[in-house]
Length: 75
Image 1 (cartoon, rainbow, N blue to C red):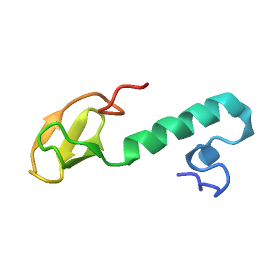
Image 2 (image 1 turned 30 degrees about the vertical axis):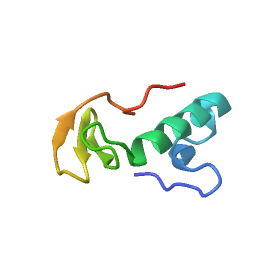
Image 3 (image 1 turned 180 degrees about the vertical axis):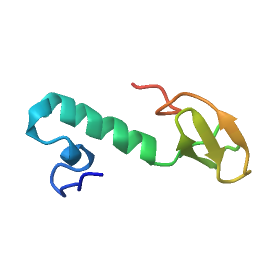
Image 4 (image 1 turned 90 degrees about the horizontal axis):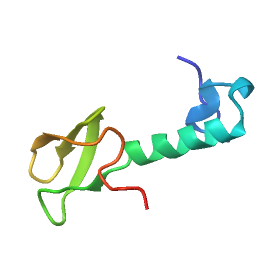
């Protein structure tokens, strides 16, 4: 696996051949999918992404299926 650079974050593994816009969009998707999000099972609970479309509520321990990248809709 390629090393990430601090300034360009997760898209550092691609190098310069993919363009700025593609790397910025990739960074945005990576950031949203790796952060904890609001759980649908508990009002104060958080959900963490385990794999593409598989989520786990950290408060209740339930594992459930959902959207691939983010539980919340893009606004």
